[in-house]
Amino acid sequence: MSSIETEVIRMGDVGAAIELLDNSFSEGKEEQTGRAIVILREIFESRYKSLRRGLYGGEQNG
Image (tube, rainbow, N blue to C red):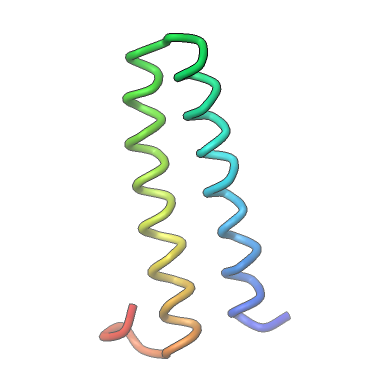
């Protein structure tokens, strides 16, 4: 499996974080929603950076 395929699969974590955010928001859990937003942002930034690095190569493009 190529590194690009691996990174696309890892982006699935973003979907899980969105689900966590959606559930906590719909249940009215403000503190948990805030944490879910932070988690989503961190996971997305990390996964997106890795995916860009795989697509375009090198740290300067990540």
